Amino acid sequence: MQGQTAFKLLLWTFLTFASLLCHGWEEKCTTNDHAPTVQQSQVGFGRSPTFMVEVQNNCPMCPVINLHLKCGSFPQTLVNPRLLKVLSNNDCVVNSGLPLAPLQKISFNYSHQMYLMSPKIWYFQCE
Image 1 (tube, rainbow, N blue to C red):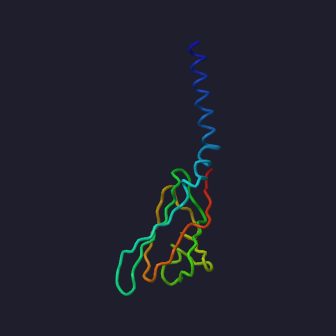
Image 2 (cartoon, helix red, strand yellow):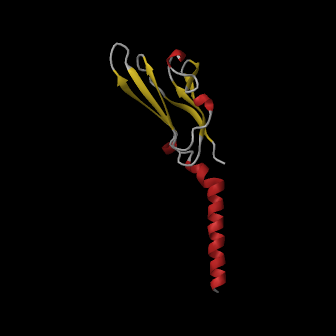
Image 3 (cartoon, rainbow, N blue to C red):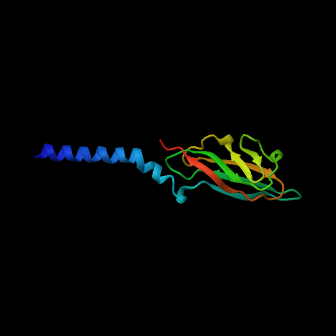
């Protein structure tokens, strides 16, 4: 009888883990609660203020790829294109579209007027 109970417990554990691998992690990273975020803060003052931008993948289990931001008319000359590349008006791609690891944050500074930025489109890479 104990052997049967142990087998059922082992089988239940395996099926639960397999379900998480196939579905659970992916579902956890598709909600708005885990959407990437953009935070800006002014870090330098003067004639040309300096702003720090932090872009974060908020999913604890999956990388985010091909993360595009709404960025207005942000000029490419203000930042390294490997960090933020301007594709067109109001479309900038973060980290050349390469993955941001779970909970990874990427940041850069620029000196100019403040440009409002927010996530536009992204994909979670859950396998």
